[in-house]
Amino acid sequence: MFKPKVPTMPQPTSLITSPTVVEPTAMIQHTPQSPVPLAAPIAAARPTVQLTPGAVVALVGGGAAVVLVVGAVLVSMLLAVAITGASVAICALVIRSLIASADPHR
Image (cartoon, rainbow, N blue to C red):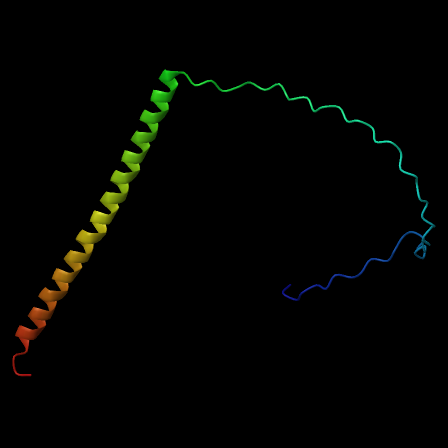
């Protein structure tokens, strides 16, 4: 049950042919002819975006709201890290003081 089974290589079922050798042929030089003028590219018909003054005000207001929300989140995270660091430092000072006052004969 726990012995690994090694897969066996299946035998080919069809006739095996040897690879064919392709020999290079001689290159034929073509004489240059007059260039064919290319047609001017046609611009694709796609709708253009038109911003009305109301849409511009909405975009600016939305962008300002996003910046304010992201800024508030980042500032609150920074404040949380600062408060956590200060509380850990105060705890370390209190513990050091308790340890130092418990054993005065050192």
